[in-house]
Image: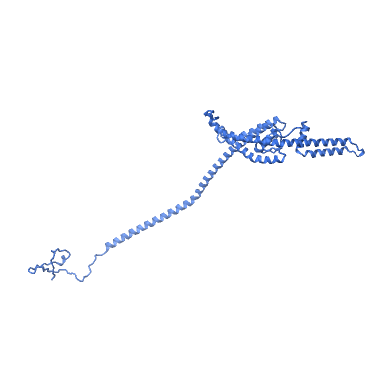
Length: 381
């Protein structure tokens, strides 16, 4: 029903932004839940500890007063009583809850000042999952310390995913804003981050009694999630939380853009090095290829020379054979056992006894074939 009432031109941007808004909302709800949980656990314990410290302080003070009013003649030594009183107070100040009580009682003239306020609890919950970890306020109870371990175990990944998601969501918009001058996206982000740190440091210096150097130091250690905790927050906690979220998100965006450009440059150099490696390999192969081509040409020339020699030899052999055939004398006929030169042969037709026909054939005409009638018998005389 809700999406049906939204105009169509707004549905696509809402679908795009809804996952990011939902993730950020989950992180905020998780931090608020942690703040309420730690406040409910630690605040009552702190109040009991401060009450005990107040009672101990009153007892030590009353004991000093009583000993001062009592006189024991020559054995009375006020200096000894004062030293004992100071030692008792110092021993009492070793307790952090008592230290908080004395700081609020002596400086602020208030006996119910507590470190575990709702905002300080929210600061603890936020700086645990981001994680900055100032150390200004820490759990004192055993159950509080156990719960903060579990809380940070699940909250830190959630916060890091949320900050990374916000950075990835805002990076394209910053890139579009900076794409007017190509190649300077990373430089612009670094300049923007430096300007943010300097401006926040100037604001801290103007709103608090800390020096400008301490303000810059606090800004850098906070934005880069170092958080030594040696400098107290110079601004109210709500403003400090906003400063932390914006600063850490800006650092994430800057790191992502710078890392992307550095990786692209590394890949570019890697491709150039790969091409140079291929060219170098080819250049190293040039002498071997030249030697191979030289040897191949020599072999081809030698084979060609051999073929020409074989052709010339064959031509010479053919010419020699032809000259031998031309110079060969005519072939003489060998004597034969029977070689008639002129022989008269009479043929008689013996099939007809009444008639005899006589034929005379020259021996030189024996090579010719004489066709006789079928059934005619020849007799040679």
